[in-house]
Length: 166
Ligand code: FES
Image (cartoon, rainbow, N blue to C red; front, side):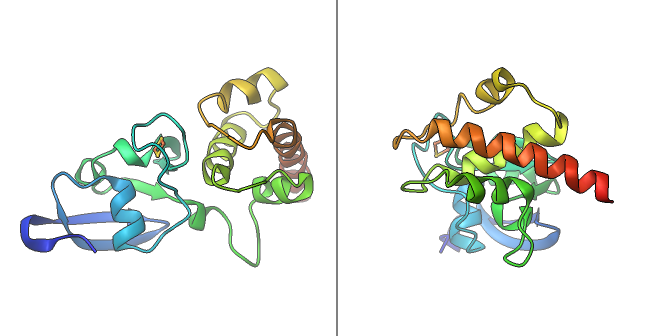
């Protein structure tokens, strides 16, 4: 839990829900998401904005929660992996990763999925180069890059098919 002794009230919008929390001025968004709200989709990797494990969306744009002060995003729309899909209905990117079996240890998956979903929201038909460029800042130590490419391509197909059905 956050030490409330030096905390200030923070109004945070996360996955469509409003929260009022006592949060120190210096707390990162990642710290608040994980430790105060129990949202463990975003992972702590480097803590320096360099690995992508902590990726969330801020107003629909992928961002590194470990280097964002929580008070700096008051009132903005924060989306975490938990808000992307549900256990009952996965987001097409989650389905794409499942279909491609694109996980080994799984630690990078939050960032890969959130970053890839942000790309597909902007660009439904990305080229391989666009996918590689989008995910170039998301590190995977296991070396599942080939499967990850397949997963994002599969997700793009699923999203196009879903749009055609609706
Ligand atoms: Fe945030 Fe590595 S933990 S980028």
